[in-house]
Image 1 (spheres, rainbow, N blue to C red):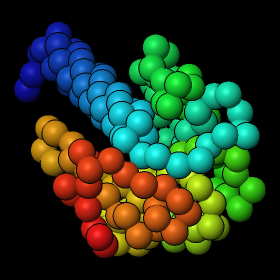
Image 2: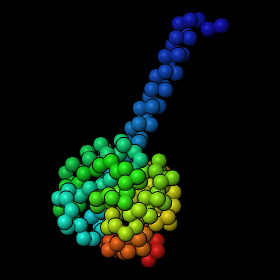
Image 3: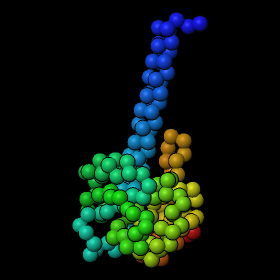
Length: 178
């Protein structure tokens, strides 16, 4: 039988490991959010389309992960897309047909809503990014794919061309549907 002080020590260690695991997981999620935000901003600058007449801010809607908005805005603080400051905002998937966004990011948690959202924005010049499985095959424009400790992307030029969005040759090396 264990001495009561040993039991307390073991419990304290287990609790500490649990807290550290949660902190590590949160830190890891934030790192993914930073990388994704950077990809969204950078790749948006490699796409060309008519965005005049809309707000003087480049709006990126986020569907799924609310933590992405805060991290995205931290990353975008000193960055611009096509000469406009960038702002990440929440995007209600039930109102996709009326979105006034320049780009939208669909998190993995939005997987079940992706097909409906892509149908709702299919005729709008909204650059679509997603981390859901088979995003570009489902009609998304840029799929972000975690690959171990790195991130890669796929580009689908077909839905982009349909709404007047053209991609720089620098990013179309990973294209689908060319």
